[in-house]
Image (tube, rainbow, N blue to C red; front, side, top):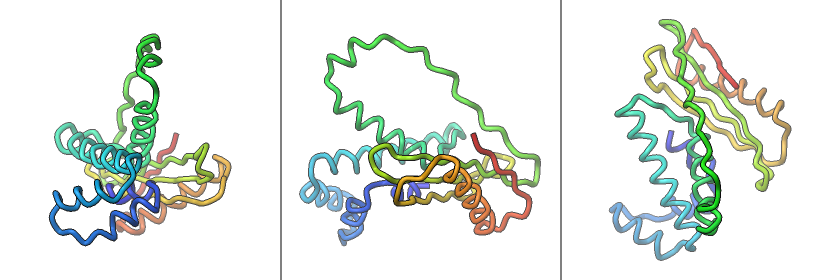
Length: 180
């Protein structure tokens, strides 16, 4: 799942992270702090935190998040950080909708949830697929970024195709694909 989240991140930053040959995690983070701009550091550290948080939710609460939802959380969190504090204080409280509950597939089947999105400012389309068995156990995930703006319908069709590829990759024979 973390690989899929990083696949959605800025390619220059992820390449920079991979170039570091530091074996010690603390030294690797220190190197990133020295060599990345403040905005890139923020993006990397928030992404690391979001992946850790998603992992903890999956382990302790059996609440699974798609790589795309983690990526979008990072984008929104960073956008919120850049807003002035006064604006945040004046906004009225909004009631949040109940979190949708994942519906498991029938016993012996694999369920692949798919989604697609179009970046407003990036000119990229993204599709993601997450596979879980009937007990909710994570089986695999995939995310693909398509350069160039695409319409939502085309991206949803590509997400379906990605679900089929993921099913083949994990060796599933009985599959249910779910989309919004």
